[in-house]
Length: 246
Image 1 (cartoon, rainbow, N blue to C red):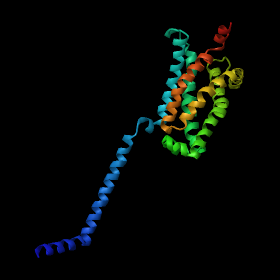
Image 2 (image 1 turned 180 degrees about the vertical axis):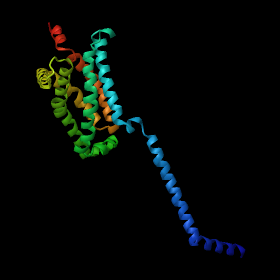
Image 3 (image 1 turned 90 degrees about the vertical axis):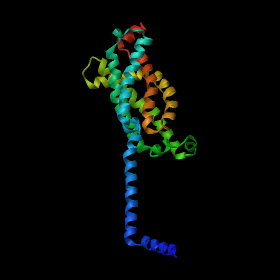
Image 4 (image 1 turned 90 degrees about the horizontal axis):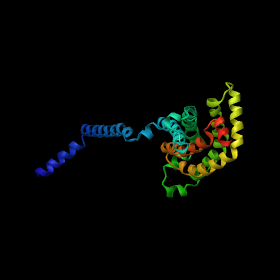
């Protein structure tokens, strides 16, 4: 009898509007606190590359181009540290910072994200899921084609040769920098474009299927070897080229 009365009282208390309000307030407070904890802890779980993708790849691009040229001069050309051509190295520092670290990030992250809208979603899929995603694969192939047939031959090489003229040329006329640089690029176009397609074609297929925050550091890693090639074949001044050919 007493047990049934206490059970009835407990039911009445549970149905009390005041009790229900208190319980709903407690539930909302717990939900907000857990949500706040997740929100404040989520940024700390991200890697530096995810939190600062531009700063990371800017530093990598600048250091990588300088290191690749220095390696070629010391290891391949057998120069001592005192004999390093720092004017030549400056070409790669300037080009690595401004073009590879700045312009290339704007093109391949900001603009590619708008031109090829499936990129962000496609990069997060597993390999099996990627193979089933026709739209994502088409966008990835479009990015590879744009890089190999538009960006590198029509923008990258003219900018590199122009940058080289800015550092090593004798003229102070910007038109001469562009004219002389493009003239030298045209003379070397067959060798440069053949080497470019052999390296960047396969590399792009991997890069444009990777998560965006690591795709640019990966490109700079591959670019270390590309920069070494460019340094060895195109880095020397015109006077040095003439001495080698004579």
